[in-house]
Image 1 (cartoon, rainbow, N blue to C red):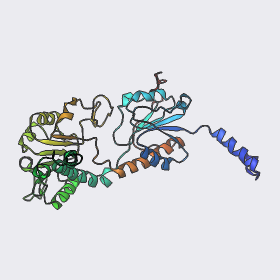
Image 2 (tube, helix red, strand yellow; image 1 turned 30 degrees about the horizontal axis):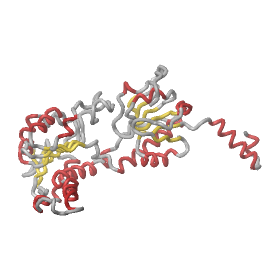
Image 3 (cartoon, rainbow, N blue to C red; image 1 turned 60 degrees about the vertical axis):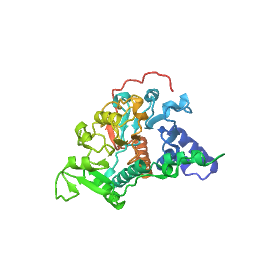
Image 4 (tube, rainbow, N blue to C red; image 1 turned 135 degrees about the horizontal axis):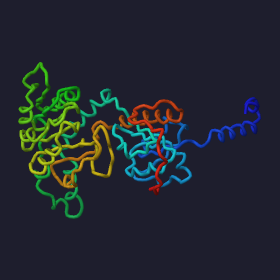
Length: 371
């Protein structure tokens, strides 16, 4: 190869290129269980270092048996975790966000890493905006109103099937409603600023003063007087929203927690089943939304929450998959972070966001059918 490098002959340069490719071996493969847009974004950060294979959430149909030995990384959360057992060269299970697989379900030879989110740098504002969006959605329910209107206002005989105008159009507003901010930290302040700009009254609490007529340390007063209760205390606080605190809330108040630990979900579920209060649930006890179809693991404990499907039939709850902070910018930053980790893996450099190192004593993977 050294002798060929000095030659200017096109044929010799071609031979050199072919020899270099052969010596380098096949390009390592990463299976990506995310959207096509995410894969395209990720591709801009890995270049030709890694071949990306886009997979559905359940399977990777286009992966041939001969290619499985070249798979060194899996990105995202395959819903069928047994796929990992069919990848003998797997070195990395890379979560695309802050949750990750139950560690016991991941082959020991693979490192597990997550996207280590610097949420204080850009998470505060999206979360605060989400709280306001949740309050708007609860108050206006525009999609429901649109469906009621379009079902009667167009087509043959329209609008004879429509209810009265007052039935179609009457709605409450956020103006003069009270937004309770339980935890007046950086997120709580951002929520209060937005709610106040909409003409809402603000009641907020924090542990230490100075206090005022609207900013106190009286959680009971906040719960009793608020139309919306945004739970913005740190995630390290546990069980603040329990049977006692839920009983203090207005009958038609709406709870909007932004982290799971402060909420006793058994008590909340009971209150939703038996009362008229409402909730916008974008967080879950273990970070997942349906047991046992998805694995999550620490820091949300070992298993997904065990609610029955009855919760999906309730009219007084909006169920969401953890959307508050995971806006477009979140996923763009994730693709960059994950891409850097994939390149580091191929280059033998240290990885970021590691939650479990690979075991050097790993046993060979069990032979299972590839789904």
